[in-house]
Figure 1 (spheres, rainbow, N blue to C red):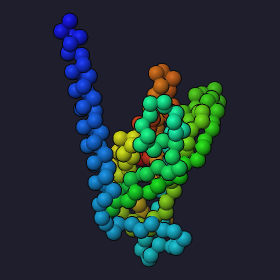
Figure 2 (figure 1 turned 90 degrees about the horizontal axis):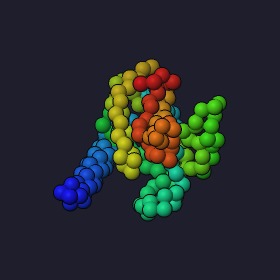
Figure 3 (figure 1 turned 180 degrees about the horizontal axis):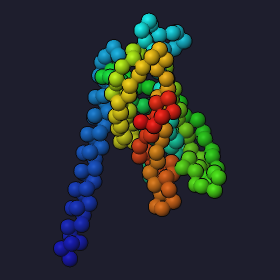
Figure 4 (figure 1 turned 120 degrees about the vertical axis):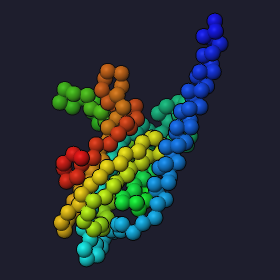
Length: 195
């Protein structure tokens, strides 16, 4: 009987702890986006200044469509036209908006479950920056996904290359990763080599 009485208090404590942790992660991501620096310059159509290389940054993920979950929050960014990606490269923070597009993929590919199978919204970000060769700490954060990741990269030569962030989705009870379960991590590749 005592266990039944304590159960609501335990659930409340777990929910409160989860909310506090979510607020901490969101605060950390916002702080990283606000850091000022002069490490890189976003390139539109122009070539980088002398001594700088071009680094292409690509990131993508798929979410459910807006309204997929009946009790979902109205503040959810899932299914919206754009999704904010926070980057911090060498201490310089920026928020880039990834464009979303409806994405329908088969649930099976080559007799394997496709993690992005089904209908949803695919967000794709591609930016080119001018940056000097060197060693950099790169941070990516998605506040609504409560996801943060930091990696170190080494850029050499005249052409810095391509830095890609590929999604890793949460698992669906023995069925493998599925995009509708949410994002759990990114796999990071520099010029096709996993970091």
